Image 1 (cartoon, chains in turn blue, yellow):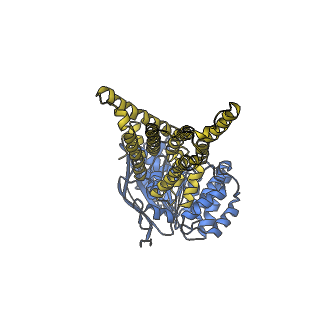
Image 2 (tube, rainbow over the protein chains, first blue to last red; image 1 turned 180 degrees about the horizontal axis):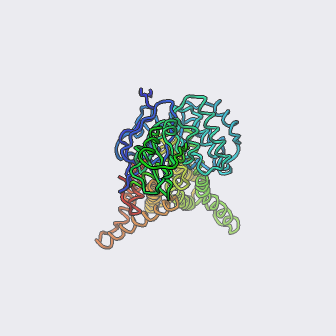
Image 3 (tube, helix red, strand yellow; image 1 turned 45 degrees about the vertical axis):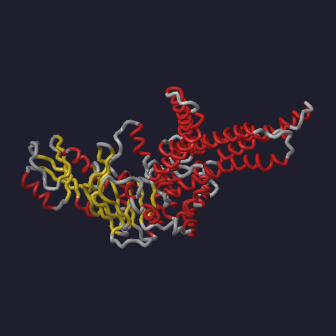
Length: 303
Length: 243
């Protein structure tokens, strides 16, 4: 089967999934270009895993469509799985199999399995072929899952909270593995994780999903450079008026006014200084984790 | 397909060994016991009696009903129970090939059990000189017993297979296959007694078992192919069905 021509590795249009009365994913439209590294973030139950399951053809959308490399995730799910490497949060590789048996089992299922690459990864991950899966540590199982996900040289790699539950060393080794295996070849990555420092390290674009809806989708650099926290000290201690345009979260405690502003520029500080009587204004750089927290807190406050 | 067959063989390996024991066990026991009787009691060699072969064969096939029920119940639910089905789901394998592989293993095991027993009965037994030839009535009764064994095997396998496609416990799926068997007997008996239809159970038991078993097998395949297990789970646990 030839790959349908498309500029997007992953594309969803109006994708929705409903579980009973609850919308797990609602009208999600997302486009990830080929070769991009996309960080998919959101709080628990936001719809990240459901979206990924629909992309992998593991869950049927209620409405809309999901395409991976131009293939429809429902109709052509086998073609999608041939071209996608998937590492889920929980690994259910047959526990009774030895590492060698897992590889021997998966190898014939893929058209492009690369034995040489697989051998390199075995060495890199220090996996013992004779060991049974049930004897492997959590970190080693995650590495085995990564090996199985990339040994067939997929065009797209989907990682759904792959480092969850791993200790810091295991997490570091896993991410090193991802970087080393992926950077050598130009692949599209969709990386979903609660460890936002990991996402920041890998992703060049970020999508933030909240209550099943995509609320932000932009370049990581742009998000971080244009989102700042402003700490102002109010001279009179009165409750301030409207915050600057683009404020995603704010808190007033005594005379301290904290706000996180999206689309920050020097004029934002000018605006505050001219409009309010302030003793001190401080601009603080934020990491992805703080931006994420403030976005979610702001959303919850407005809701 | 080869790797799927290997995986399904490995998952059912213990069950296949159990099937082998249950298939050959009665023959080995009967031979040892028959030998003991003929030597100690100076009796006529038991293998000269057609009843020895027929009863051992029916005993072996009767026991194999349990093997087939477990093969049916184990088929899909075993991988769902330990959640390895989720691993299989994200591999590039079409659902129909998963079903074909599981069916081949189970049907091959069933065919082997029946093949071995019928081979012994029709090819090995006639090599011994029988002390008597069974009459027509006995042959008709034996035919009926074989038909009942076959029908019950088909029923428990097919219904076990169906329950396996919708449940996440292979033990429960196997148990349910015997519940279905009891239900079929119960319904037929009820019709016989309530409606006064004479010999209703005797007349219809084989056909109803065969149809229910084959129907259960195809219904199970359809459920698996269309991923209906989630909808069934919602229905079973009283939640609103997945839209």
